Length: 93
Image (tube, rainbow, N blue to C red; front, side, top):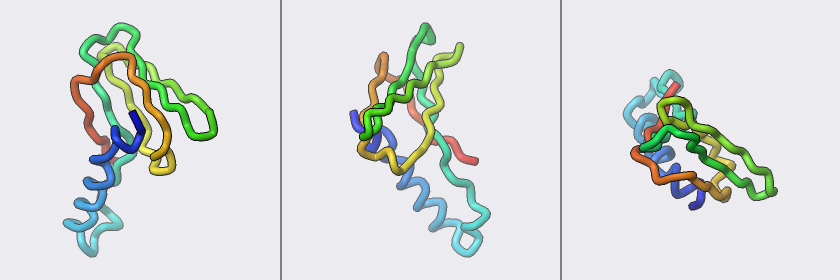
């Protein structure tokens, strides 16, 4: 799947936060990553193949979670998952 498909909720969330924050938007939180949960923690991973051919691989932790960075420049990259996800949640800083 394309990175833009996996992360399509992040720009929408970003715009919503800025809209609600109004003049205080400079203090509003911004998304920095997506937390993805695999149903089984055993050696799960997510792989991002960038348009220049670079491959970045992210391994799940002991809880089956992978933190995938939010990078708008990666929109055309391809994402491969080792298994279907249970849930995906944007992380804010």
